[in-house]
Amino acid sequence: REPISVLSGIDYVCKAMKLHSNVTNIQQDGCAILTNCAIDVEKQQVTLASDVEVEAITNAMFNHQNNPSVVSQVCFSITSFNHEERNVRRIRQVDGILELLVKITQYCEDSRVKEDAIGILDIFETSESNDYYLENQVLDSISQILVEDYRTMPDEKMRQVIGLMDDYEWSSKVFVAILQSLNKLCQQYPIQKEIVIRDQVVKNIITRMKKCADFAPIQSNGFELLGEIMKDDDSLRSMVLDMDGCEAVTTAMTKHIRNKAVQKAGRGVLNILSKEFPSEEEFECYMRTWNPEQKIAAA
Image (tube, rainbow, N blue to C red; front, top):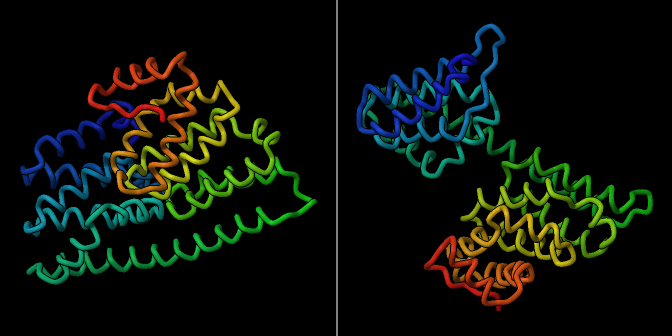
């Protein structure tokens, strides 16, 4: 895998599968190559699949769900990738994959493919059950962090919550709790906020929000936290602008146009970002430079 990765071979394979999504042989061979690259037999390890690999493999099944040969190869690929728990989690969260696997178990005439699909569903079910347990554990941990305790300094509380971001980036439920907790801590301890909440933390928040643009609770709570962080910090406002923060806000507001919490929190962020401009007119002009059709102005 390493020399192929250095030469961007995996990306080329995924690109070819996308460009020739209707060609059966390319889908089968592509899945086989990605699977072989993922498995390190000597180390008995399976690498973490990239987003493009997950997309290529699952799309092959979606596009050729009535072709037992392709489905069989995809099932083999998913089963191989599933030896790494993080891959299990990512693949089972692909929209429509569970329903398609159930459909295959019900209607596919190839008994071997049926068995493969059943095996994958069993793995997914176990993974989901384990994740549910882990989520509840970390939510309890966050609640304990927020409990008043003179032995734990406020800045340490913030760092403990921030430290959960990377470990539980897969859980939208946990990320919402992290956003809510940080917002509460920032309001309680404004001095510590300025010390702890710096560039990298804000970057992580915005990156995660962009990735979960369809999930309204992340957007509304993320906007509320960003507003709290930026309101007294010029440098963070500039950084959010540099990260296309306005675009992220207006995209979320457009996606969730009937969600009052998203609209209110998003408008609050735009109001704060508008302070970086000499006038409201210049801010509106800036908004139109990256999206001429977008006419959201600071209220």
